[in-house]
Image (cartoon, rainbow, N blue to C red; front, top):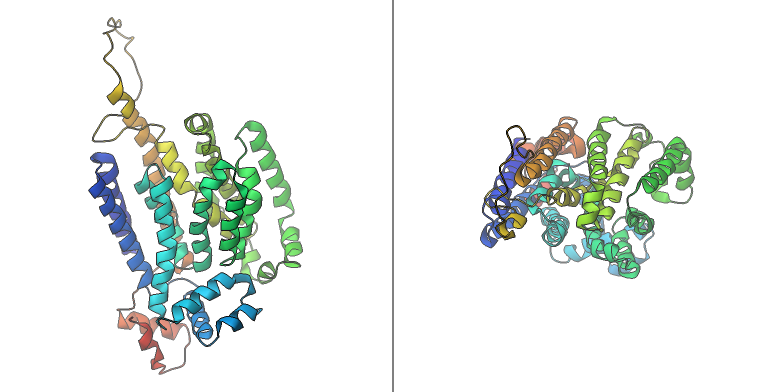
Length: 412
């Protein structure tokens, strides 16, 4: 577990140095390289982490024996054809599962970091949120879903501009990896609404109606969607802890409180606020049906971008004045105020960190909670280079005694 806190410390220290203290292009490039490289290494060379770690290994083995034609015609891979084809393409070059994990990490983390570089106003804060809010742990467990979350970030420009066709194209492409991406089709029409008391009331009213009849609705959906049907009778239809909802709800409330300032800065910020509201509502629904956590994770990735917009409402930096203060012409001195009537208020820099610090603390608490409950089976961390750890995981997974075939999976 300590390695994750080392990663958070590296992101925090390198990010503040590169973006807050004395921003420079070289330092920012170093930040991207170090943080991406650290995450990629942890994800690629892990062993046994993630509840689905071995499931994907067996899927990779089975696809190696099939031709492209057999994959295209198979009903087994119909719901995630794009992902199956990806596995087949990788198998043409190598049968190493470790190499495949590296490909998964490169796609998921690569798409996220590209989106951060393009869309985030405070990149280090977005990357910190990605790990601390458990999205990085999710990428090592729910591999297909996490890949979809990152790919869907490229919908943002089209969502902001109201261009439905290219938006739909990306959603359909992502749905060939995991069908849950299709949820983003109706989101296009609702997320672009201006955040007002009326819209908030309507969304919360619809959610309340759905929440009251959530279980019957899921059973109805199971009759038409095989993926939903596979969860019937499992623990995923049981209720989860209310603790999952605390941070998303508090963050959504903070964003709603700042909605006017955020809209004035950029009307497209209403999209982020709406998406983060959907995240909070999905996590509230987890109390009744744990399966809704999957949708909460899908929307939680947009917290990484909204917190950056909230921080940039106060664009000061530790090593320099705010842009508005730098560019302001010299004004004539005002007459001194009488005693007891001096101007009060926080500086722009203080206001900025009044936004950032509570978020950092809250995100760290989320991180600790997920690790403490074994979320995404991300701890204890073990690598393919640790012989004892590898053998322990194999034994715990009840493989046949003496199976030496696993040794070939340890290295490229």
